[in-house]
Image 1 (cartoon, one colour):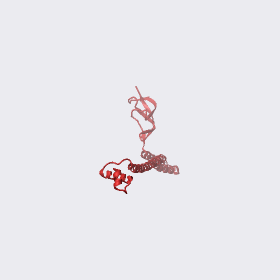
Image 2 (cartoon, rainbow, N blue to C red; image 1 turned 180 degrees about the vertical axis):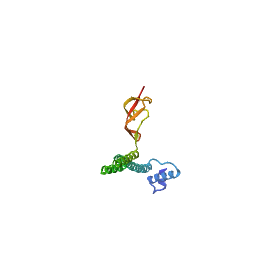
Image 3 (tube, helix red, strand yellow; image 1 turned 90 degrees about the vertical axis):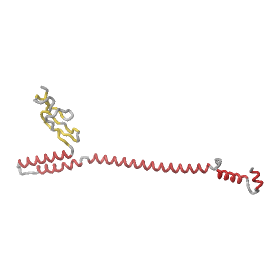
Image 4 (tube, one colour; image 1 turned 180 degrees about the horizontal axis):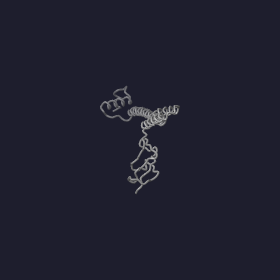
Length: 189
């Protein structure tokens, strides 16, 4: 058929005839051989490479942001540890002021000194309470080895293993024993 076209149209070469036939097949919806596929594959490859570069950039940005968040959180924890006692110390400053005033008193009036010491003790108790430090004073309670330290057992009218006397108060800080109470416990009869 190509020879017929070449003889009928003397200016048509076999290459131009093949190109014309491919164009007519494409217009008719017939798939062309892989000669056209090379530019399409190159374009698809370029698109995929661009998408890959974009995803790599997004990954690096997300990784950097995660590292920044981790670093900021670590700094916040370090600051919290470093300055955790700051609020508690602020509550203790009035107690220090009261003690300094008492130490500087030269009047020698024992009634005033006693009144000042009682006031200072109330300030100290308030500061401890604000710092979530609670007193353990377990008179009449059952002995708890996690909160109490028994010094002795004495015969008593109370039920066995009941705290009879507190020799030294204990302290809790946020439900954790800071110092156990030193107690005397009722012995079994």
